[in-house]
Image (cartoon, rainbow, N blue to C red; front, side):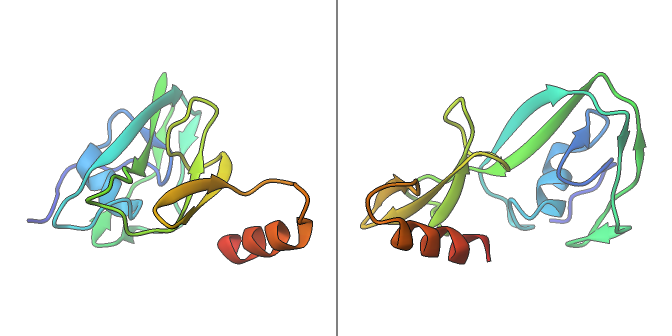
Length: 128
């Protein structure tokens, strides 16, 4: 079922945005639904987008709001579709943070270590 309602901004949204429609526009879920994490953050002076429509959702530029939110897909055992993720300082999946990869059903942080070549290659390929 298509989601309706305003979406102000892309990736960082005004509180005036519909959460489900924002998640679809951000590609955290598709039109059939899914599980997401909503992280509240400080307000933005404006909420921008380069597109008028993203993933079938109308996205508008929004004005100042005191509080913003960021959406990320929840990566649980039943919903795992990716082998990479970013974890913020609070341990939640986010759009910024430390890079983790899944190896044999276990998440491992890509970090500097003894075998720098392997970690550099993993980080490069994940970001690519």
